[in-house]
Structures are given as C-alpha cells and as structure tokens.
Amino acid sequence: MSNSSSITQFLLLAFTDTRELQLLHFWLFLGIYLAALLGNGLIITTIACDQHLHTPMYFFLLNLALLDLGSISITVPKSMANSLWDTRVISFAGCAAQVFFVCFLFGAEYSLLTIMSYDRYVAICKPLHYGTLLGSRACVHMAAAAWATGFLSALLHAANTFSLPLCKGNALDQFFCEIPQILKLSCSHSYFREAGLLVVTVCLGFGCFVFIVLSYVQILRAVLRIPSEQGRHKAFATCLPHLAVVSLFLSTGMFAHLKPPSISSPSLDLVVSGLYALVPPAVNPLIYSMRKQELKESIRKVISWVFVNTDHLSITVHK
Image 1 (cartoon, rainbow, N blue to C red):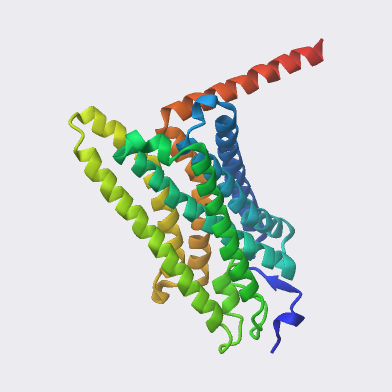
Image 2 (cartoon, rainbow, N blue to C red):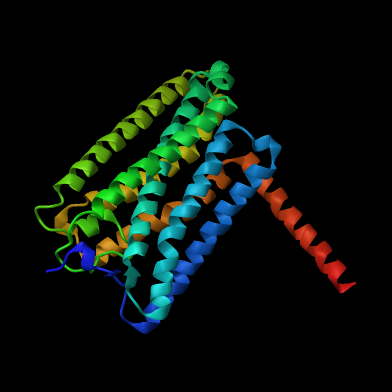
C-alpha cells in the first residue's frame, strides 16, 4: 500500500520490450511528430503572413493548428525519449503536467471545433450577417473562451486527480499520463469526486456535440435550398474539412474511452490511444490544405519564398 505523497514517479506502459522494436517505435513517432510540426507550422505561418487569409474561418484554423501542435508535443517526445533510452519512468511533476496540458489542449480543441461549426452555420445560413456576428472582436472573444474553457477544465481535473490518495502502485497502462489510468491507482472509495467531475465534463461535451449536429442540420437544409448544383457543391465544400476533422477527433477519442470492456486489452488500449493522440494533429493540416484551394496556393507561395531566400542566402555565402 502506498499513497500519492510517497510516489515520486510513475511507470508508463512501453510499446515493446524488444530493443529493435523500441527503436522502430522511436523512428515511427519521430516521423509522425515531424510531419505534424511541419504541417501545423506551415498553416500557422501561412495564415499569419497572408493578408487574404485574415478571415474568421482561417483565424479559427490558426488556433486549431496551435492546439494540435501543443497536444502532440505534450505526449510524443516523452514516449520517444523513453523508447530511445529504454526506460518507462516519468516524474510525478511531469505526469501532473501531462495530465494538465492534455486536458487543457484537448478540451480547448473540442470547444474550438464547436465554435468553428457556428462559423460555418453563420457563413451559409446567415451570410448577410456574417461580418456582424463574426467580427474581429467577436472572433477573438470566442477563441479566448475556447482556450479559457480548456484551461479551467484542466485545472479542476488535474487538481482533483492528484489530490486523491493512490493505493495501487505507480504503473500506468498507457504511454502517457491520463486521468482514467491514474484513477485506477486510487483507493476504491476515493475517486467518486473525480468521477463526478468527469460525468459533468462528459455532459458538457455531449452538449457541444448536439450543438455541432444541429448546426450541420441547419447547414444541410440551407445548402439543399440553393438552386444551382455548383452553388450547393461550393457551399458544402467549405464545411467538408471541418466535418472531417470533427469526425476524426470524436471517433478516435470516443473509441479510446468508450469501447466495451470485453474487447479491452493493454495492447489494444495502447494502439487506440496512439490513434487519438497522434492521428488528428498529424492529419488535420492535410485535410484542410487538400480541401481549401486558397490555403493550398498560399502554402505554395510560402514554400517558394523559403526556397528562393535559401538559394539567395546560399549564393551570398559562397561569394
């Protein structure tokens, strides 16, 4: 028996004990991480630099890219380091920081995706009021509300979780620290307070889900009333990237946490958690850049500018 005051570190679940597979895991995660850094970094740089993209939709997309960069940076580097150095250890403070930032960034991202559905609703269903309802000040306030919601939720969950006595060791069945795994280590009679907070969070999350669904029901009705087929296709095409990102975010997260216990196993839990922690941040930039022609063109300009200036710098150095 132990309690949380005597625990100075946790043991994360390793993907494998074989050294060759550990190195394979390191290189695989490194490739995914670099792809996420490159994709989200390009979107942030392009939107920040291109005046034509200073619109509400791209402002929210910039915030989404920032959140994706943060969420993958919280979990992946530590797992890569553990595989490279053949260890499972994470400090108590490091685990608490992971729990806080995972809750913060994922909560803020879900709130932001809900706001982005409102942006699409106003753009298609109330186009004449778009500039009024989604002015620059309103967009900043909504984005700040999304970040603040994630921060407040994370603060409550992290403080509540790590105030519980831990009586069942320090080994976590996950490659990063998350609340459900830490609750498994708490005394059986002591986690009801955090469980209640989780229920409240799930209810709020369900409310956001209902809002997104209702927004798209209204969008679909408005699109079907557009007389020309080309107009319908163009209107729905602006919603498709957001719809794909929401579906990816919710499907991976829900399957990871709501799958039946009968099919649960440590290896499956590890793979599924890897999907929801890695895939959305790495794939979201690809979804948006493929479907948004103006974003694609702006990214090409940024890449061309970088290569041209690199060539000029190289020529100057050689001279």
